[in-house]
Length: 435
Image (tube, rainbow, N blue to C red; front, top):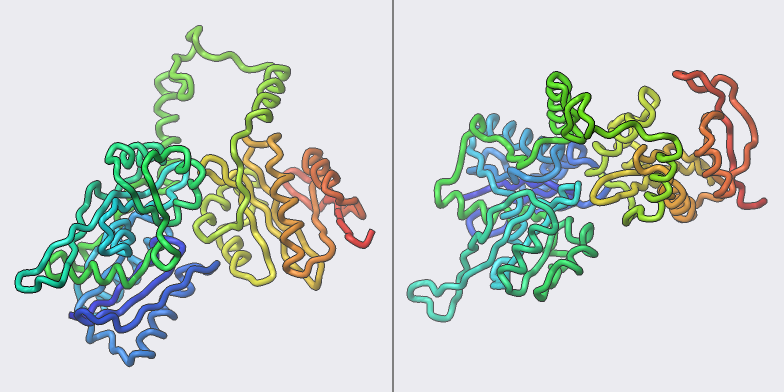
């Protein structure tokens, strides 16, 4: 049986072709490109290299989720389009099962972890059990056993489940480096991390598992196939939250406190002195904030942060994707408790760095996140050959101006009436390293 495998569920974009027990080809990319840009060129290249006529395949295997909502939609749409055009069935493979299959033959507990944001992971628990095929006393075969099928849960919960089993575990997936510090503290059993050639989505492993599914008849038509997100998308969650808030308002309920309107238990508005006290307390215990390079998986959250802060002036998802895929840019995000709370970026223009974005979530301002992000941005900019930096800021944005001046930027001009809604001047700042 000849199967085409497609996996765009995470940062990795991958395709593979298998014929029976022979892997004919595989192509995998994990880089700052979007799956919509690379998937079809990858598939076309694979077909050309092995002189494959897609009409000759028998089925299309695809990672059905969970994973990146955008990535899953791209992979699903591609698989369905090909299946309809070629009149072939689809073999849906649970994403986490496919990742676990990278460790075929490992008899320890296997725990893939995909970063699901908000301190959650898409995960599951697996192991392989050895058996001796009839009449082959020297050859061992393994069967993957699912201890807990894939699900979305907190890092604390999956660590507790692993500890309850009490056996050594192998961790893999893009969620492991994100939550490594927490896992170090939470896990009470010996654990190891799969090496780099086995620790991410792999179309070869996916198509190998799909061969077993095909033998068991686990195939569906293109019309029947649908991705399995496990959770609502961020947009759907927000819509649901708004709907809940609206219903609560209609019944006189305060969603945050659970109190009735007019009830004496409802919190009174804080005075300015009380708000300042809370801000000081927050600065003392801001939580762990990590600054790292932005990835394609961050685009949706980063664009939402921009829109929340800047409204019509915000960069769109398309603009952020375009910026991310350029060779002359650096984009960083700040992550707190699995949530994107900051964004900043710079573009190198003939040795001069134009700082294009600096956004911090409103509820996290005053914690030094902006300073931490921009400081790293300036340090990393040297790797692009940037010597001097420039940016523009609203004249009325005193906190941002204070931040930039603290980092060594100096005002060198004004663009009157540059900003709209509300109308404001743009102050031009430069940080010249020859000064």
